[in-house]
Image 1 (cartoon, rainbow, N blue to C red):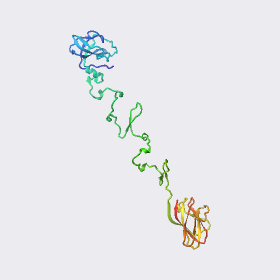
Image 2 (tube, rainbow, N blue to C red):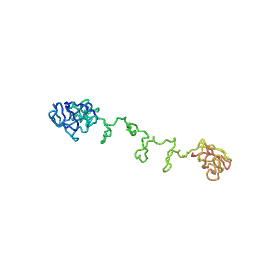
Image 3 (cartoon, rainbow, N blue to C red):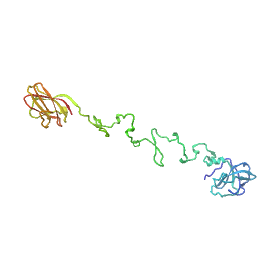
Image 4 (spheres, rainbow, N blue to C red):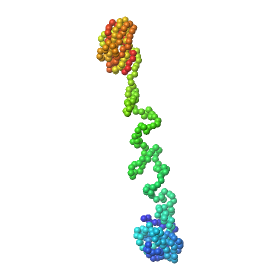
Length: 321
């Protein structure tokens, strides 16, 4: 219970006889001079004890009280000792007080030490629990300041929120269907080996980087110009197609008039037949043809002719690797 301060407009007197609160209907005092003859609030003070009462009028040296809990202004403000039946002895100070001052004081709006009512300054306002504010919303201007670009993040029960920057872990995982506008810049595409291309892998599968499909290279590079060998003879094409397997198309011709056939195969590969891949017949002088074969893993092929009586000229016309 608060200890009430003395208001500035007090008019004092003293009890000439004891008073038992709730039993007596009037107070006997030294003098009622300057006490208004109309309902007012008085304060009784004796030592650490005090209480407030309402009187209706004054007569001679008596102060007539308003009785009953419904109208007794002090019904809810008992003596500081908590003893409602406290008997106030003769000599107890009786003060005329301002009801408005006490009401303001009990509401936390009156400072008895300073003797002034609430000025509206922050220091004069009572401290309130958040539960008292049960309606409405605070305006944005009342939120604590934070650095530009930061967000107010909850820290858990009983902890003050703090301003933080968003972290990658704060961003929820979104399905691609949520991204309905715009295009990703190239810098957001997944990394891949230089020269590779992004290729589809089928429904429900991630695309993957892969090398470009083989491209045909056209050329005209002579690789043999000599008497046709009748035994398998190696010809190294690695300076043209690389030291790797490759598909090659070879142009064959002869300046001689003798007709003959030639066969080509991968180095040390299987014997080829007299028709199909790797076989061509050169019928006469200045005639020729094209024959295709593949190299071994080192870019080498073998040549064999049906006759060694003629010169043969071979050139790579095209290859794929």
